[in-house]
Picture 1 (cartoon, rainbow, N blue to C red):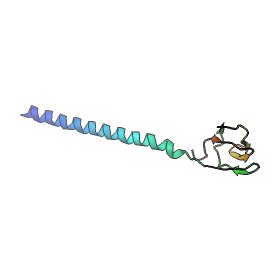
Picture 2 (picture 1 turned 60 degrees about the vertical axis):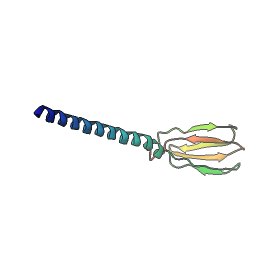
Picture 3 (picture 1 turned 180 degrees about the horizontal axis):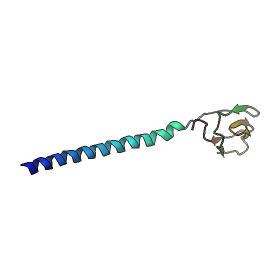
Picture 4 (picture 1 turned 90 degrees about the vertical axis):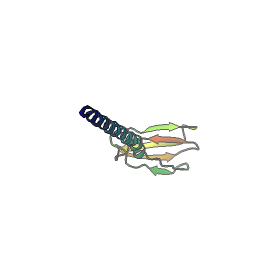
Length: 104
């Protein structure tokens, strides 16, 4: 009888451990998937030739990554100093700029 009670206790502990591990993995998976998305921000900007858009403060050690989808002369990225960049519209076209913000 005592052996059966010990086995039942071990089974219950094992179930709680399994449930706890599954819950921990679920929470960790949820946080892992949401945190990178929260750190990203997308801003759509439409510029005509000669117009300027000042970008939010980049991290001082960040190097902006520029990609053009159709016309490499569509805009110019000018950085006057670490973290201080602006976009100047030049010609028709599309592109994107990717960098780390001061906030991470």
